[in-house]
Each structure stands twice: as structure tokens, then as C-alpha cells.
Image (tube, rainbow, N blue to C red):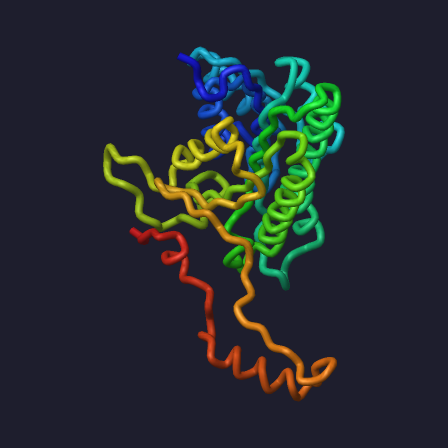
Length: 313
């Protein structure tokens, strides 16, 4: 019996641990041949010596289960190493069909305490890292489409976060990077649709090395039950978005966790005011905007438990 991703090849970045590992295993389970990418630094802030271990272990796990996988330990934030990553899929499997971007680091700090290097490093790994791989994958798909004179098969799944939607006080760098990834995703969706490529983003909620502080204290399941925040809840959506079944899904943002998928709409206008004359005066803006915001709750951000739909233990 054929599998949904039979004959397709995939790259998963940040696949040595956590979400990326679960996603790589799921794509392989669905039949894809996988390039498991992970730079292998042990610190969630990108510190420590790079290691081939995490990527090699996941690739070996896929092969032991009967799938095809190779490890790649390049840094996706480095433009040339990202080029090499995409080329490795092409060289190994003849083409690239699926790109899942998951690699990232955290360097949390309040905006008034954040250093330039803490800002730059997170933007570099998350946002530039996504751009680098998407750029080289899109070059590959565009060239193949032009050579074939027809659309080809291409799927991009990028990883954003609700930190950019609801705000995250101690993560201005991370929230900005994740918002940028959504913009990159939707722009790419428009640019590559004619070549047969879809580009979507997910906002996953998962208990991983990067989120251990965020979810500390939230209830874990009893014995024999899967954690609602297990990465394994996220991986099936990635597998679906990577598949032929999702051909009609493009430029979308989806929140996923614990058996739930939420489709996020684009921002809507909540109120509109027109000037009495050609342009607004200060006084007129004061008359319409001040009462509008005075009528709204003083704090419209949700408490963590409400946002997550979870209970602290």
C-alpha cells in the first residue's frame, strides 16, 4: 500500500530534538526520504559546541524503522551552509519536494535589558535561517518548473509562534522574528504558487527544550496518557501540509497542539473613523479614538492558562 509521501524527499531543520525530531519521524513514517538537519549545539540559546550527534541519532532512528534518512549538521543561519543543505537533498534523492523549517534559539530578555547581540542572534537564526533555506529551495523549484514547462511539487512549512500574536513580554526578539516568518511565508506563497509550491506556517504549542520555562507548572497527563503538549501532536499537521492532500492550502497560519488545529484569520479592521474634512485634526482624533479605547478592557491580553487552554498543576 502506498503512503502519502512515497517518492518525495524532505528537509527538516532543527530536527535533532523536540518538534523537529517528531516532524522528521512523521514525514518518514508517511513515506518521505528525509534530510535531518541539526547544528547540534546543546544550549537552547545556541551555546555550546556543535555536534553531529542529534542529527545522526534521528537519521539512524528513521533508518532503523525502515525509512530513508541522512544527517546534515550545517547552520541554516549561514547562507552558504543553507545552500549546501538544499543541495544535499538534491544530490542524495535527486530533488527536493518538502522543506520544514524548525531551527531556532532563545535569548530572552525584557526590551529594556536586551543587548544588541541578543536581538541579532535570534533574528539571525529564526528569520534569516528561514529565509536562507526557503530561498535556495525556491530557486530549485523555479528552475525545475521552467525546465518542465509546468508546475512541480513543492511544500514549505515554516514555524512561527503565538508569541507574535499575543505578545511575549520577555521575548521581543523572538516575537519579532516569528512575526517576520509569517510575512515571509505569505509572500513566498504568492510568489511560488504558479510553480506548484505551497507555503504555510504553524504556531505549535509543545513542551520541548526551548519551551521548558514557558510550560513549567502546567499539568502533565497521568500515566499512560500522551502529554497535550507533546511534539507528537504537532507532527501530523506538518505531515498533512507536506502532502498532496494539502494542495489547496497556501499562505495559511495554523495553531496546533494537543489534538487541536485552529486556522488563524488575517487581521480584521475592528473600527473605522472618517475625518470631517480632508484630513484629521488632533482634536478630532481625540474625540473619536480616546473614547474608543476607553471603552475597551484595560488589558486585552489573555492570561497564560487561557491562551494555552491548559491548567497549572
